[in-house]
Image 1 (cartoon, rainbow, N blue to C red):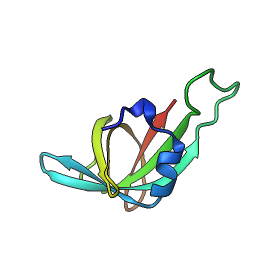
Image 2 (cartoon, one colour):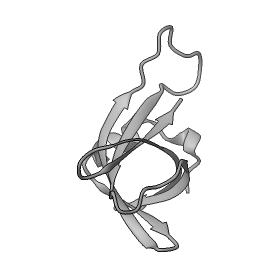
Image 3 (spheres, rainbow, N blue to C red):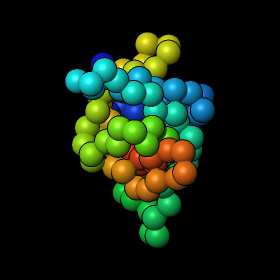
Length: 100
């Protein structure tokens, strides 16, 4: 597993609209990556990678708490990612991950 600091926006752009598996004690759920975008900040950041954020959609029936989750996807992708619930739509919970 690659350290989160090694991930950048280019790792996620090809996975837009892809499903990620998230194992849970109750079985597991699928999250769909619906947005990959640079994270804009006035004045920018010094050093490190360019900040970006991800938006995932998940099922309404099993909302996740804020926390770090192991996500896996096709192509041998497996990483622990910190997710924050940021909203709810009619058919999905919305989660954000920010990398700065």
